[in-house]
Image 1 (cartoon, rainbow, N blue to C red):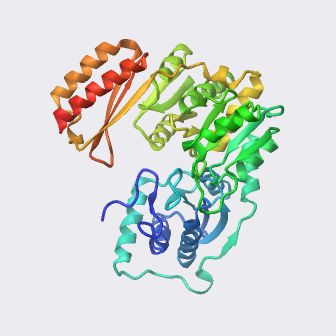
Image 2 (cartoon, helix red, strand yellow):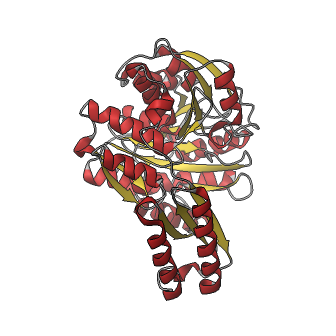
Length: 452
């Protein structure tokens, strides 16, 4: 069996790859593994379970709750809430385990399972591996030890979850949003109630899009992967800015008052300067991935802010932040982590902090985001090649060196083998889009000839 857990939990097509039986089995396995690890020692264990609005989340939630309760874990069912809300509540309520059922920005037929450890942090890789091993062992016939009588878990709805989370979000803002009209695109996803409520409590005048989930329309032509509606609505309503979330609201992209996109790199840049001003940017350092635009790196250098790079993936950003004690990090895709207030990327919190900076300074988002200039970036996926030889091919290394020499200080080359497919990603940045495209196409041809 291939590894079930990827970089962001277990994902697949619901009722095909991710079945009710799997959800139930993984929940029981998680309970047993955490019990063995001593997590439940000395007290009755509790888990927080939440989901996004996908139709499949209804039966997967039922299976997950049933499995946990059958293994002696009390369950607080929080219903439809964002991933960062489940993480926050896991910590705030002192729960031993958090479970989020969501496939984030994926299309509706998919779903996923993500576990959080006590405190709301991502479950350690070794625990995920152990859960998977125990799940597989019992899936093939080994019987479970099962509690009886008063030992079984009890299940109750925790309806206070939304209010607790919103109060947390509003409570950490440095200033109110009074006087700002903001358009929110909720992607018909998990933040459809949370985000409008939080922005309104903070004082903003709110216009909502994508806030009528029916179980089938999540991410469908809306949200952070489809900004067209948001761009038009911001201009139409004369809004100060627009905020777009994905299905589980752990990411945020923005739109300025002219309808132009403000991506994750620009959001990070704006927040980095704001946090440094409040002495909240520890070590004057921001963490981002190797896919961040070169314009971000140049802007941070110009502003005297240190920039630490990691591999692609918000998990690597978070690992670096926790290891070194940094306060801010994120990805171009809009995963932004403010570690003093969240244990994971939080799209609603990010949007609130961005809007707070606009309100505080009285400057348009367009002006704030201009602290960095996005250099043209061209990405070409080269399929059907031996991705394992990217680092060892002399022909490829020579071509990259030549390209880097041509681009100089205002350009960058990144060759990255895919982690899941037989392809290599060629990314080139340059001050001029035509130059970026020309260099990228030339390198893609070398990749094909050298690794094909």
